[in-house]
Length: 173
Image (cartoon, rainbow, N blue to C red; front, side, top):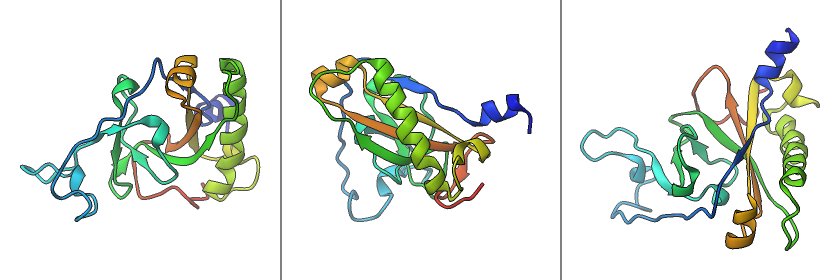
């Protein structure tokens, strides 16, 4: 594997979220009664994204179909059993009351997401360097930190070859 190819597969990009993110909530009579019902279009029974999820409230095991557009309005979650681009493999909170600076947060995201990657995928260290999968992370901006008290680093894993169905936990590739 060439160095250029390895760099493409090992992604460590920060998605800077500008301003405070707000979670929108919807009401559906089937919510809670039928798992995944909130993601079905009544007219076509096709999956539709749930754009009401605040990116900083995502948890391990949540799946996303892309990260396109403005993250201020939320992110589109989908059932992991459906084809999806990203899966949350780690989410961790930063300590402190004062914003430590973007460089400090990015360095911490690289450290934490990098350390969690191999064990999640089931590869020995350094997992990300030897994997055909890649990762990205979402970190809080200064506005997120001070105005909304968002302190989460959200680590997302994906297959650079395209969408996957099911979890990538233990994929060992």
